[in-house]
Length: 513
Ligand code: ATP
Image (cartoon, rainbow, N blue to C red; front, side):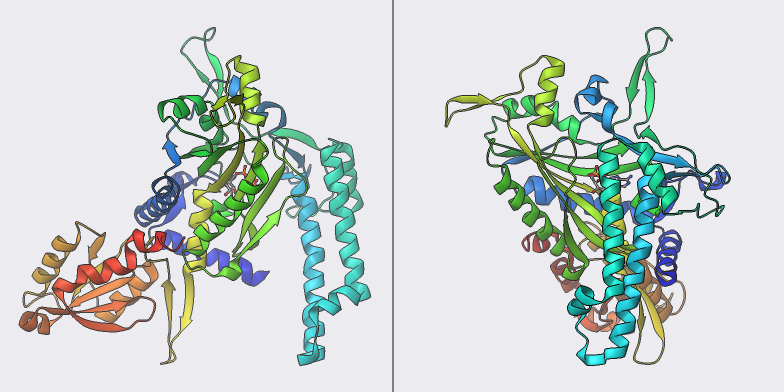
């Protein structure tokens, strides 16, 4: 646990030091769970956004993209169920005055039991050596079986109480498990209450005409209310998808995991409209397609897994998360949801407008079913950034910090370094930049010895360093150094553009999906 926390702290401080992410309004001591992306972060975020948009909209002739407003008519949120059901159960500790999500307190308790299981496994593995059979151990060791049963009983009871809105039982469970406030150590809890996560605001100038609004908690509803506008103007035939990238806002109670859980964040969502009855097959298809998108970035197959939901949201008939191995363990990165006709059907009811599709193949009108893919851009950023940050031991006994961001997403593709600040080398470096900058983000760096500049670019995530030296003056060649292998090649200046584009051009990466 301590190592995990330490690794995560390193990620956060590296993000700040190398111009990726800082706390919002830091000079005023920051705003909790709100972050700003600085120069490199803004580029990385833009590249992830583009990689998703191209994979969705450009590569699929039946998917189009829109950009709906953040403000929406308030009835939208009545229809979507957010006003009535977008709640988290919260509980306050009376001594520390700290607020927690009641379900998270219980889940953290269960996670501690799971840690005990892992310890037993590690102990046994050491004892039995090569003959250790983990599966058999998990299925037969009485202590492990006891722990497993305990955690399952707790989770089942929590699930049942939440489903039945039995908040008194959630509190009773917290008391029975003797869960204490991590801050004050006390078990002096308030009752559990439901808390709506939407941010409210007002539109209009005078008090009597002002209308209550919400900042959208998801981008999906902007797609649903525009379903017919887009279908008609694009003459789209089912199956087709509408994609959108935009800000969403949630007044999260537990917001302590850097950009994993933010109050203002960005979502990349796609709603795929299909014929009722075909949802199982499309759900399966989108699960596979989205996993392929992730794997195309080469961040390790072992770092992803599906988590199929047993408890479904009010709108879904199937749902799964793609989980990623963050520094604090496997957690949801993306959701794939089979949303039935819940949203369109509900908007029909509340708006009184028909939201149906005329299917020429069967000569019938129907409300389409929907399969949604929904990923947080900031969470994807954290996945890429935390996975890329590595401390590497080198052959000569030293170590280096390297940010192995997939080259296609890297903020800066190459740094051009004159070996010395004289003899005409800086001028050639600038000429190289003037040529490459039409295609790539490139920077100039002349400060410090070249070895230190390499290290600096490794840590910033720049895939290439191009060094101009005295030989360049004679034969128009430079060295190009690869971030990941640290190998150097001597190449002609005129070859640089082709070499770099082979690694960073999105088209080569998109072809892998
Ligand atoms: P969680 O269970 O982690 O709260 P969720 O199931 O509520 O997430 P969805 O409503 O399915 O999430 O949203 C889709 C995606 O949006 C998530 O998979 C996640 O990547 C992202 N997301 C949701 N809430 C946040 C947040 N507060 N900060 C950053 N990203 C978020």
